[in-house]
Image (spheres, rainbow, N blue to C red):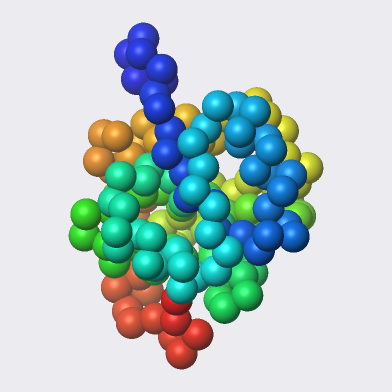
Length: 150
């Protein structure tokens, strides 16, 4: 929350349909508006058209890419200052460090807990609201995407 007003959170979920149902249910039960897409290509198209998203939730592996490619797409969007949260089946310290070092906001680990989801997304949305994007310690975000580009 910012001040005493609840923050309305607009989220894009980038995750294959067979993996997204538990997280979609948890997000909707928290009252969070979700736009679900299923791959990098669709995420890129939506991000180009809808810059009002505050948080992008992405699975670690997607049908046509991975979380790093989604992060690159978000970082390249000049009007988009959305924060990226990576969803993982396992609590992996290396993944968490990689996400933070490359400019992501956090990692959300299964099983999804409503309070944890709300805490992470409220923090990410508040950060987006004030116009701060996590910055990486390297320049990989400014490089062209690999051949498996979104």
